[in-house]
Image 1 (spheres, one colour):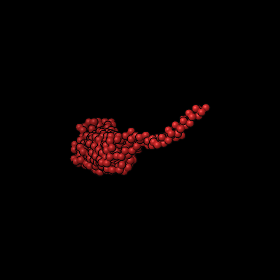
Image 2 (cartoon, helix red, strand yellow; image 1 turned 120 degrees about the vertical axis):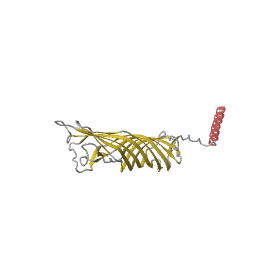
Image 3 (cartoon, rainbow, N blue to C red; image 1 turned 90 degrees about the vertical axis):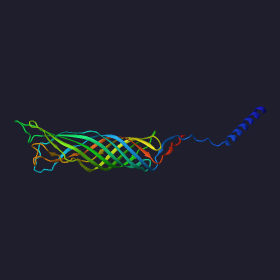
Image 4 (cartoon, rainbow, N blue to C red; image 1 turned 135 degrees about the vertical axis):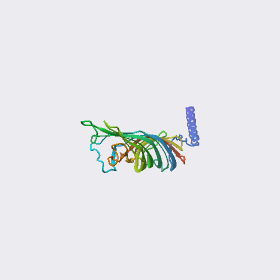
Length: 288
């Protein structure tokens, strides 16, 4: 019995010495916190974009400058279209914090051709019965667009940042090489042309959404879809120059590509002057 008591006392003494030794060691360090993203600090950046826009306009309204001409009451636009336009822009911006930023951009939109066909019945020469005549208008449109833009960044996951944005500014619209081909059924076609080009300022505005990718702490790549409205674009006056359209007998009118807009696909980059500061994931806390 005494031997059993001695062994028990020895075991208790060993356990107490082990606990005392363990108390001499510092507590275990928490696990390292993994780097998950970069948090944008305030600072300036440069940007640039390239893209292509699917353009359209709602109407081709006429404004005659010759009051002596009687415009056909049956005049109807039967076809209108414009080509897509490539564009490039550059700008400078400021990152306010990790969710708000602003930039100012200057954009060049390349020349794109447009075509409009109108029809009428009055004054249309015929050998008998009803007839329809046509006018085909051709020209080109280009623009310089200056915009102040604001963006909301909606958070960053796996280096991807979705964002939405809106902009307002001005567009210097230019219309060149406008011609009017009159198509009649029994006479030779008539032809009108603009002796000069036309350019004018319009209010421009946009709305967009996209996705940015953090290539590095300085470089961001962007892919975005944008709606851009360039206002109503005015053409130069189209003068008549063929037989049957001389003196006061021609309309000598100008036209508007009413509510000219574009749905753009943009690929861009932003270069931050100040690198972004890394942030870390919060440690996991187990409950219970």
